[in-house]
Image (cartoon, rainbow, N blue to C red; front, side, top):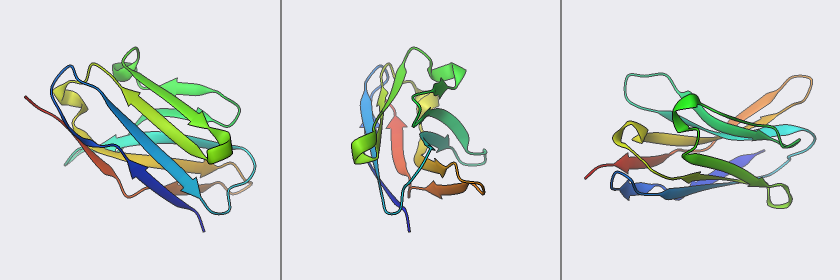
Length: 118
């Protein structure tokens, strides 16, 4: 069984920064992708950024240049450094792990609230 534990959310003023962390534990093997999604009420969950075990990274356009995703493979941990936050970034952020097996396995964290407000 795989578990994802997130930390680092909170309240920040516009222009501020936060760093999210997510550590995966359990039976993690092979190629995988770790990332962050976010969701606001009434909207679908959307990809923020992800990073593959190969090192490939992708970001949604609205966070490029402001957010940085990184991972420590030995610790099965992924980070999301968020700078220049604005109110549109307010959401529940979810950590995600995809094990790239023949039948991909997808896991989610419990979510952490990020609120950008003055």
